[in-house]
Amino acid sequence: MRDFKDNLLRGLLWLSAFLSVAVLLMIVGFIFYKGMGLISFEFIFGDYSPEGGGGIWPMIVTTVYTIVISLIIATPIGILAAVYLHEYAKQGRLVRIIRFATESLTGIPSIIYGLFGAVFFVTTLKLGMSIIAASLTLTIIVLPVIIRTTEESLKTVPASYREGSLALGNTKLQTLYKVILPSAMPGILSGIILSIGRIVGESAAIFLTAGTVAAMPESIFSSARTLTVHSYLVTQEAGDIELAAAVGIVLIVIILAINFSATYISKKLNKATNK
Amino acid sequence: MNRALKEHTKELVKQNETGKGISEMAQRGKGNAKIKVKDLNLFYGEKQALFGVSLDINEKEVTALIGPSGCGKSTFLRTLNRMNDLIDSVKITGDIIINDENIYTSSDVIKLRTKVGMVFQKPNLFPMSIYDNVAYGPRGQGIKNKKELDKIVEESLRGAAIWDEVKDRLKTSALGLSGGQQQRVCIARAIAMKPDVILMDEPTSALDPISTLKVEELITQMKEDFTIVIVTHNMQQAARISDKTAFFLNGEVVEYDETDNIFSTPKDQRTEDYVTGRFG
Image 1 (cartoon, rainbow over the protein chains, first blue to last red):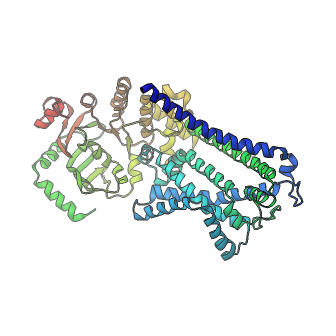
Image 2 (cartoon, rainbow over the protein chains, first blue to last red; image 1 turned 180 degrees about the vertical axis):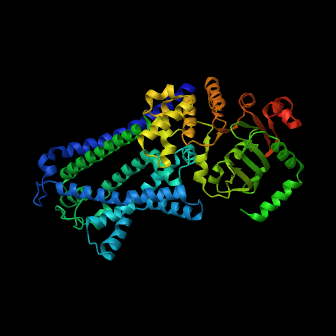
């Protein structure tokens, strides 16, 4: 009887693991099967042409712009906010409210952020449909992610590091940047990777704030189209599943590349401190 | 600090016979008092953890603090370099004078901690190289010159009797060392600040017997240069390495005397019961 239960449980565990991997493989397989035919040097690095047959280089550039700008704004603010919440703020009502607010922000559907961005950044601040308006909206979307992950990784830094550093006559600020932040770095980095995923995967909020102009952006104040928005539009307007799948392949490769390089950097950082 | 409360506590302690007895006992100590503690009371919020502690700690001696868990010996140790300041709810009355300076009225905690080093219960080296760990304190004080740092690191590691074991791997992670080696590097790290006093909070409780022996030998050597205050659970250890011993019970100092006297002819029945292993 015990053997049977054990085997049943084992079977269930195996099945769950198998199903999740199988689904992932199926999706990736489907995307590659549908879109691989279109992938070429010309497709990736070529300029877009409305008549078809052009490349997606403008969308890749736009996507990279949104990632870089959002992170440049969100990373420092997010890390500083988390440091304040965890290291400096008196744990009381205010901190609880801020924490509740950041948690709630993560749960809001992105279309709501998009609407807010469209009203506030695009119209009120007169930024127009632009990469900068979209990036600012994305900043708000990823800020709670960075704050939460940074706070979590600060929690994992042993209290003995703080005590050790303070007992050696270091100030709180010295302790923070010499011991605490370096130890928390891998966690903070994974928060940033998650954020990149959020940014690359976002479509609704960008659609409403950056618009859909399918051309090389002249500056960050131009309206432009990211890869996800492009993928959505070619499916929606032209019903071109193959093209959408090809864009999907590029997206998957970009995400994988970012993940691998982030893991690599994090390992490098760990080696520098832990070896 | 609340002046009225302070006065009130002083009154209370004056009335308290034991309090008087202890300060007299402390006066009798020979040598120079490096640290003078008078009428020290400590509260965690509403709960009082130390009651009218008064004792003088002599220069270049090892003073052991013994007593059962929760008796306040670690709390007392941590008042000496103001580590209790990290806890918001802690209130302290009374005076602690180190080098003729009241450490709770002069506000420079950083300076205090450069003069009063600390070694913790578990080795708490930072995740960086051995060299960087030992150079951490001096760097924090603004020493950047590489030659000077090299010299401090070598002297400190020699001072902690671990130089020969680590000299070829100074640039590798300190966390790769064994527990006993790590604790000696922790001691080196404290020495690197060139402090007057080194506080040790059960420094060998996480170590194996051989490492413990090494650390004990080291402590005995170190008292030539430093005033050492050590909290220990291990009474044999207190007997082996300390010159004076204070027995804490429920936040009070029951007895404070030469270590030999504490272990051979204790004056208080409770001390005798504790050192003979009847409780604790």
